[in-house]
Length: 171
Image 1 (tube, one colour):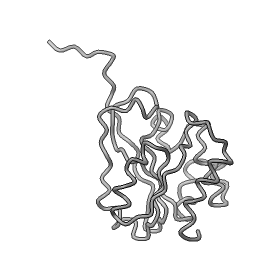
Image 2 (cartoon, rainbow, N blue to C red):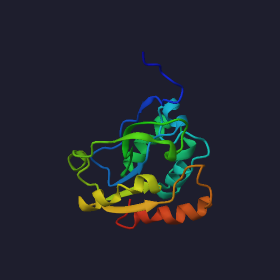
Image 3 (cartoon, one colour):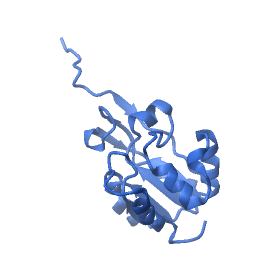
Image 4 (cartoon, rainbow, N blue to C red):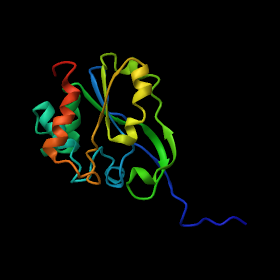
């Protein structure tokens, strides 16, 4: 008789993409952290720097808005959000704890986002997917993680590197 043990991680499903036909810059994380999964919101951890960085890049106070108001304004600036993984097993929020990763299906991305030119990867784990996006003809930028677990750079230092997302055109 098989017994379930506490060492088994539950299967987790990621969040739906935040994209539309105006998306020109897609930010791909690895997989939502525990706070984001619980809230069903991208980058919900209060110390994650993604929303302050996107606020600076768009000139909109996205970090100060309720989540439901952030998304349409983000899309209006040509930004989209998604993750490279659509499912995995993981205890906690660290990428290093991810087991049994299953990539999202990006086959229809060009059809859904015909203006997409740049794919930014939020951290090294998602950045491992950069070569496949580059091979598909997208400009790729691997960026420092906005996670509070990666605090070796200041917000200003991260923002300087994240500004590379805007180099291919104006918003």
